[in-house]
Every structure is written in structure tokens, then in C-alpha cells.
Image (cartoon, helix red, strand yellow):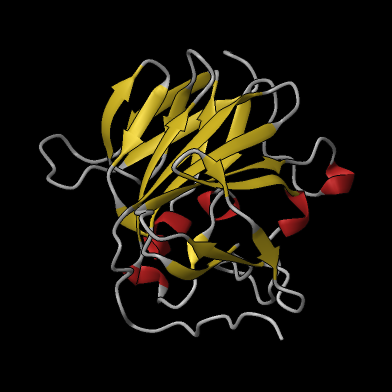
Length: 217
């Protein structure tokens, strides 16, 4: 017998907001490095990697590009088991006295078109958060809150529909949003970038065009 995967319910993830940190600076190896701080309650916990992608018509999340998964609580490694049937589910037991765990992994993006769509080059990248997170099973996506922050290569400009709350060096801290909004808020970033305001002057609703190119010209 193996652990059950809780069915999704219209119920908020009670322990709180998940902090998602993505390091997008490894341009040579084209790797997104992910660190998640997940508030938890003691007991059984199942974390899922997103397989159903908005606009996709089959469970096609690129879990074959995920590497190096580790989980820690209070500085100690946690044992985990991958579900033998649902390959995108990871089962853990949260010890007593633990209120948050840290999950870390890498998302290995394609280095050539034969491996899938290239999303990282020396001059631009496309970050889709739905590729770089795990989420707790048992809840509708709009009932799970994420607080994302991304570290970009130095000097790059990033465009996304997410609201930026603050900046520290090359790291942008975005406002917390539900998982369904995060999944629908990809980032385009690049070394050579330009923003064009499209809304009329004085408009209350900003409309902006973000342009990223291979070269400054």
C-alpha cells in the first residue's frame, strides 16, 4: 500500500503562503534553481509537480527536466517517497514541532531544440513558474498562495504581469498571488530590453509592451 493523494478541495491551504525563490542566473548550464519555503503542519504531506499546463490538453508538465530534489526541516534532511503510480506526487511525513520545510530542486531547461523549447540563452529567458514549483495536494489552485521572488542575471530587464513589490540588487520580490494566477504569469527577461507605454497619458489602467531581443540594435 502507498500513501493516498488527497483530492483537490475548494479549501485554503491553511498553514500559509509558500515562498518561492528562483535563481535564473545560470546561463551557461541553462538551469533554474528553485528554493521553496513551505509552511506545514505535522503529519502526512503530499506535494505535486504541476502536470496540467494552462492551454495544454494532456498532463505534459516537464517533470523529466526536474533534478536534485531535497526536503529539509529545521536543518535536517527529510525522507520522501515518489508515488509509484502518480509520478508527479511526492510523499513526506512532517515531524512534530516543524512549522515549515524547505524544498530545493533544479529545472534543467533544454540546451537544444531537440530537447524541447529553448527558454534560456545567453541574452534572454522565459521563466514559466509552473515549471519551477511544487504545491500541496488537496486544494484548488486558487486557494494556495505563493510569494515569488526571482534573481535575474545582472543588468537584465524582466517583464511580467506580476506586481513587483521590491528589488534588492538583481532580485525582484513580487506580490503574493494564488497559484492559478502565478501559473498564468510567465516572465520574459533579457539583456537587451525596452518597455513601450501603450496606454494614453493619464490612463488609470497601464498597458505596456515589453520587448526583448538578441542584440541591442
